[in-house]
Image (cartoon, rainbow, N blue to C red; front, side, top):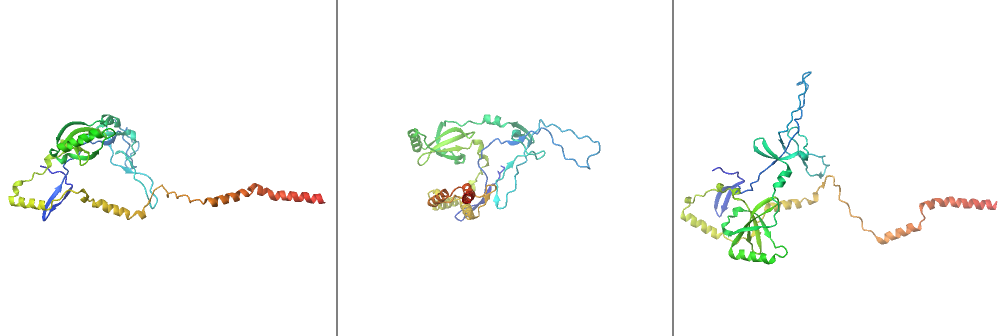
Length: 329
């Protein structure tokens, strides 16, 4: 039996017993995966050098590629370089495999590789047409004993809460499942996918789990333990150790120490945060206005004549003085 890809290897230890183990995924969603491809209209000309071109050699005609597609080799980041002490988000732009030129969104197709370098292609609209529409009803097909479901089939967990008017039938189903130890099997469509589901009674309400399908659980890759390697005394002693270390399950004991260390590292650098490129400094709040001071200044401005009137005043005074001198002469 071929072993699947190992995701972790180390030792499983309890008490003074240490067991070398390696982990590989027991189940995963099986999805038809497409690649982004495009259909170039023609092959771009290759760059020519003076050494390779003879005089009067005709330029070869471009060859159409109507029946060929090219996959994208990978994203290329573009954009201006950020200023010092700033950061900017990374943008991706699809480029073609032929000449590394940007590919327009209208040229992009979805391609499924049926064999090496041969694709069947679809437009995004064709794939959207076959996506499952979100259902408005989860039909229960049957009820099964909860303990008969291997937890390996559980994928994602959801709390189910009653909508308006559904409180009483919700409570009825919850009580019935809790007292019979049965679970409901059904299916629903959401986010463009169809999901097999199981509904069970939790501590206070209903809980829904989406399930892996049988072909997604790699049952044939489960390692077959050889129980003949264990004698009766070893087994009894191992069970004694298990009973000595037994405890009630408490989720509060489960700690994600990596997230805790990462959060502490982020908090330690908040004083050195960098502004985003092109965003500039945050606008400073307007100063609080002193209303009494503003009113006093407004009154002073009201008492002063306008600048135009102040400019006319000296000329008017000179005219008056001139008329007075002529009158006395």
